[in-house]
Structures are given as C-alpha cells and as structure tokens.
Length: 261
Figure 1 (cartoon, rainbow, N blue to C red):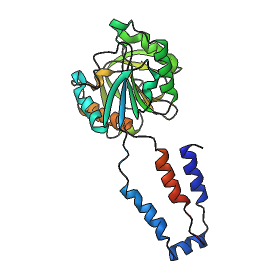
Figure 2 (figure 1 turned 180 degrees about the horizontal axis):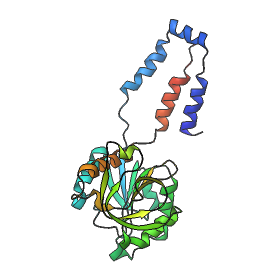
Figure 3 (figure 1 turned 60 degrees about the vertical axis):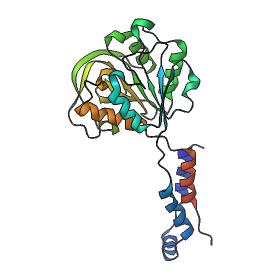
Figure 4 (figure 1 turned 90 degrees about the horizontal axis):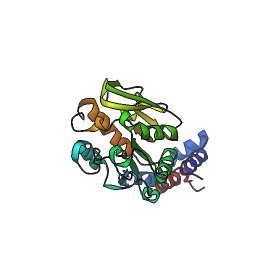
C-alpha cells in the first residue's frame, strides 16, 4: 500500500459517532494528546539533496552548482538545500538519493545538439516519476534537443519568443507575482500546465516537473523583480519533499490510536 493510501485508510478508520465524540470530550485520552503534541518536536523535514544532471557535454552558461552567470539563482538554491552536487545525466543510478533534480542543457556547439540513448531513458524516467525536477530547454538554437524533449512529452516545439510573457493561472510558482516575466529568446513546448505561457510549464504525474525554456530568465542580468520572485518560487517548489513513509506512519499512528475500553 502506498504512503498516501495508508494515511487515507487511517482517516477512514477514525469515523466515530456523536456519542463517542462526547465521551472522548468528557474523558480525554492524554496519551493520544501527548502523541499528537510530539509533532511539535519533530525537525523540519526539508529536502536535503539537489542533484544537477549534466548531459555528456553540459552547457557552461548554466554553471550550476557553481556561480558564474547564475550566481544569484545558485545562492537561492543553496539556501533551500543542504547539499547540491553535480553528476551525469547518462548515469541513471545517480538519481538515487536525490530529493530534487535539475537537468542542464546540452552544449550544442560541442555535443552536436543531441542526447544519448541513456540520457533519453533517464529523462523519460524523470518525466514519468514523482521526484520534483527542473528541466531546462532553450531557443531555436537548441531545436534538435527541444524536439527530443517535446517528443518525450507528446508535444511539439513551438519556436522562440522574446520579451515579456504573462503569468497564466495560479500556482505555487506564481505566488506573489503580478504581471509578466522577462525572457530572452525563450523556447516554447506545447502541452502541460502553463505557468509562464509555454515557456514554463508543469509536467509529470503530479505536476512535479518544471519544464523551463529560458536559462537567461534566471541569469544575474534578469533576476530582478518578478524574475527574482519566480526564481525563489521555483527553488521553494523543488525543495518541498514528498512526505516520507516514517512521517506518514507517525501521522497514521496518531489517527488510528484507539482509547482502550
């Protein structure tokens, strides 16, 4: 049974009638109350490890987890994660132990603009999995790899757009933002849940993967105003972990606790 299924089962078990409720109110179960209060003593279970996945020849302009042109964004990520490490997109085992993922661009000039078969398999696993991830693509110069990503998602590459793009809808990524986001020759892929047009969309079975078509959106030149807010929201989104089995079992234990008769 899944973690969420276990919690749902225990919630169903805590169905008591009015007379039972009155009895509990008259004679409180101090053990259960202390058990529930113990949650206040639990540590903050924030996501600990962010893994950067680089294709065979990753794009140097992104420069994560080091500083470079995106040092402000790197600092934001550093505030939300205890550990940021970099490894190979071509090594599926590297995904193990990651609380969140960022997939770098292919360096078109040096890598020929293509993903390897193993890298495509890893990307397929990311898009079909539930780990929170940020996957970059780019403008028309990256049409080859953009088409690969679009194909994996059942969409199509729509070309590039430059200038201001409006926020669409309401989500955790748009919190606090009113107006538009400043882009620089950003790519667009159809489908998904639009956040910044087709430049930034949510994908995956739990809308857990951010697909972003503009690295420059978060570079040190443009990461001000709404772009800064979006960068902070993206980092916070990645740093929200899936509830652990231990946590859900602890909650389930409290909910399923029965007063002895």
